[in-house]
Amino acid sequence: MSNIAAQAVRTARLDLLPLLVEHAEEMAQVLSDPALHTFIGGTPDTPQALRSRYRRMTAGSPDPAVSWPNWVIRLRDEVCLTGTVQATITPSSHGPVAEIAWVVGTAWQGRGIATEAARGLVDWLSQQPVQAVIAHIHPEHQASAAVATAAGLTPTDEWHEGAIRWHRSIRQTSPIHRS
Image 1: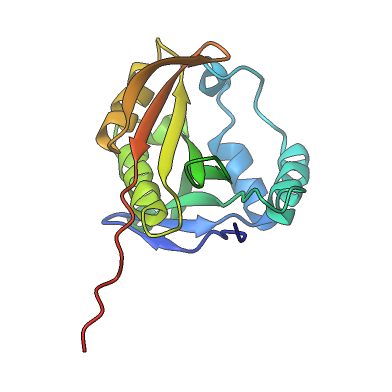
Image 2: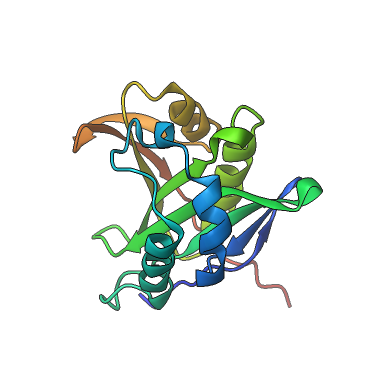
């Protein structure tokens, strides 16, 4: 599997922009609410810690078989960043699988941004050589379950580190060749 790099994705209201280290300062503010860590653990990163983390993320996976496309979510009308979406694409016996995640800052929640961004991400992934999309969602995180449902994922009976595994198969279509 060759490396799959993030490309800009446009939805009705959002631009998913490939992550840059320069996004760290604004994103530290967007992600500063400790409540965002209720289900995932940890605490908000400082701008310096986020810069360091974004440096590692944008450098890519040390495993050449794994891709780490990451995006920030920009709300076009307000010209501001509101969150992130990401995918970790790994090989499997059935073809590449993308594990996705999303987070939207508290100030922008309840406006459908996570749903629109996740749908945009899954639509983009369906154009890549990816066979399935998965997400791991805490069983009490109803908002993330709603986002996953809207993006076409369904819960499975599999668990991973206290979270339910959600899944969506991607049907790869062959291009039609016409003469």
